[in-house]
Length: 403
Image 1: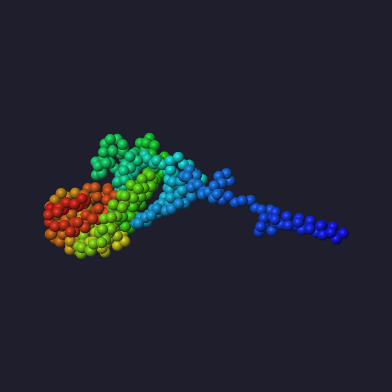
Image 2: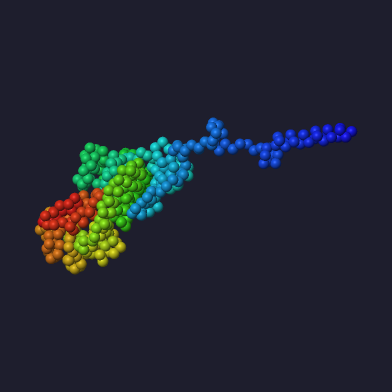
């Protein structure tokens, strides 16, 4: 009997030992969890976890996933954000939004409802601003422009004149009275205007289904901020690298000038219209700041402080403030276009007593000065060269001496 009981106990012990060995360690005998793959379920088992595939651009089709923002050095009146898949969203300080959709991609469902949608490639533009045209031309995208509001004879940019003569760019009429029939027939869907766009023209554009982008570069505080708008147009036309190179070239002039000492020389900038009205640049104007960046002092630093553009002045008041200026920069294209110093003095006898006139330091801007916004850095450098020039140097790239 004792042997029988002992045999039963030994059998029970053996069963317990077998059950313990069959349970996985550390889980209390519960069912084991499924293995973790860390990736696709059909990935081949190579002994280690497979990395996830990098999403391709087409994976972002139809949706906006933020990537980064464009770096800007001086411009304050626009911004641009990049999104995955090549989408870009630009915003200007007047509240305009421009969504740039890459070729082959669809418009995202979550795009801002009030955004202008531009599908790349962008072309057939109406550009009613000569400075904007100069920026676009500078990075080699002039073929994107088909209409202008500046007549052929008024252009000083050779590439634009050649394009108009070849029929690639058509004159639409003045910016205030464009030819709407020609505009409708052209198929253009985007007009780039300056801030002088009138309400009636804007209303007509709206009727024709033409979107408007206002170029606000003239509102930038720093002269190079005007040039930096080239980056916005480069983004719209798919030429960011080329646009960046244009900006960098102009910024390099300012960077080099910043390393130099001030000249101690003063400069007055003005012009006299055919009707005899004298206008000078305000102290807050970008041309006055160009003088300062060149290492000079603006002679009318207390006129129109904080204001841009020009202000009309009486001759005597102007003379009192500018008579001791070391240099005169005369805006030739707006001021009767004098060819000699005698032509210049014929506009007002009082000018003859100015120090700059007596010392032969009256310089004029070239005819293209206000059309080529893409060269502002080089223009600033010319102002510096003017202040360092001796009597034998009479011509620079954008300035020439009246004799």
